[in-house]
Length: 85
Image (tube, rainbow, N blue to C red; front, top):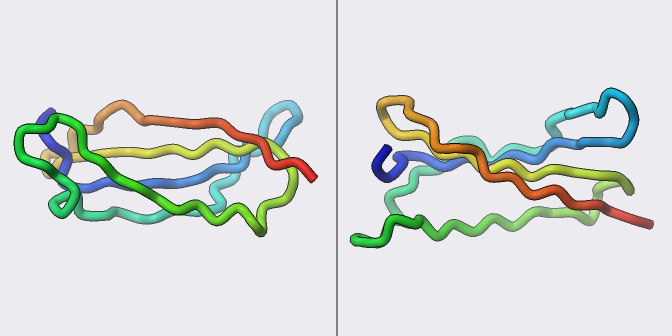
């Protein structure tokens, strides 16, 4: 896969318990990657401000996805984090 045509971010709640809830609570939708691509750099720097002020205490997972125009998906990038009181 070359550079992706679009980037997407979503955050899902991974509340404790068995099974975890995995409720999607936020999504950027598709964002064109053109403005973030630097010629010659295989990495696309992309920043996303995640508003956590309104999140209830618990465990969360942020998932970043990239896809090109041929619908090739790069591996998801994830980060888990906790909000405490």
